[in-house]
Amino acid sequence: MIKALIVDDELHAREALEDELLALGGVEVVGQCNNAIDALKTINQSRPDVVFLDIQMPRVTGLELLAMLDPDTMPKVVFVTAYDEYAVQAFEENAFDYLLKPVETERLKKSLEKLTRELSQKHDYQVITPTLDLLPCAGHNRITLIPHQEVEVARTALSGVALLTAKGESTTHLSLKVLEDKTPLIRCHRQYLVHPAAIREIQLLDNGLAEVVTTSAYVVPVSRRYLKSLKDKLGLCH
Image (cartoon, rainbow, N blue to C red; front, side, top):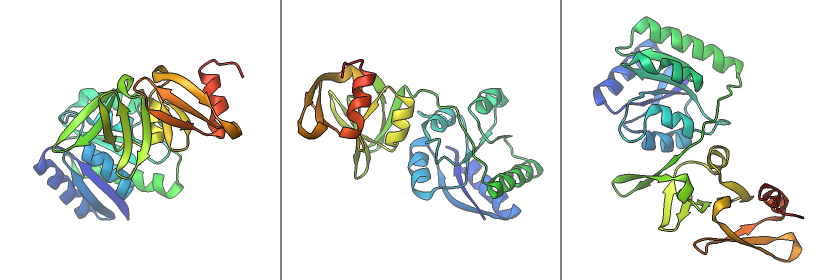
């Protein structure tokens, strides 16, 4: 059974696609989302095999959501859109398939058959990892997009990953690994990343440990494992 998530800002489009998938059989629809931020959270929680994803959505587009996914754990992505001009870009960013609205039953069936073969072979699907310029953060009834240049520290938190800036703390559903791979933030600890441009001081401690002090006076631990690589990336002498 293929686990599928449907992401589209139009309710009737989500419901129509779910009806089509259920009629074809072999698919369990694990959820519907009307925006990319909710979809990111649901993907991390439900781990679907495939995401049927609209491209044109408010604030964060389907293409931007694709760039936010962890390449090691991401599901297959099938774009479903009324516009064919995005097809080249979608496949450049390694979308699994591209369906035009209104979705034809036979075309959807072929996509599911191809997906079934891929999943049965456990094919490693490598993706290009474009840079993320804006990092989505969920707040009370709003979504905030923070430029990565403003983030001094990223650390694990109970509700996701905390992004620390000069203005305070926000929470994103992006993983530390995605942030490490797709932004200038660098690893200094298993649970921390730091922006090299925000480092103002490295304090060397006992037992090969260290602490980083950032522009806004955040104190960040540096583990023995990452101290050497951190100094290397900063061009510091050993």
